[in-house]
Length: 198
Image (cartoon, rainbow, N blue to C red; front, side, top):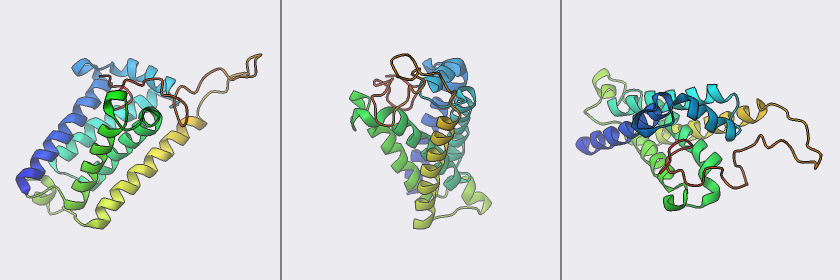
């Protein structure tokens, strides 16, 4: 089981590090910070630069902590929050299937992070080495709840921080809300998160 947990942590954590550095540095074909900022702007995540930095740093640091098995419940909660936001702002209107830009990939990552928070990182981890490993149903549920709550707070903060635009003559707004909480996603082809294209 420890080998399986180590492999799961290394894979999931490594993928998140990749996604985070795509956002921050433009590595692995990513958009870099400027591209991520533009994406956040279109998703109504204001201020866009702060949210771009937050998403990139959370994925990179959270992925590194998860891979190392350090502060595992907290790392899991942070990554669950990012994926929950990606589902809400990008993938939800597209249905479950990743081929259609849906949310299945994000949901699998959320499930994996919840499982690691509940079951613990295993023997080959810094949490075990330092005597800080925590396991149990409450830790898994807590990580899931904290991640979802953090996502909700982030989305609401982004909405409240959106600049006010004058109404157009037709009575519609200026189109500042490029995100989705009911309409179609502006990036229906994205797979893993708001700034990673197929």
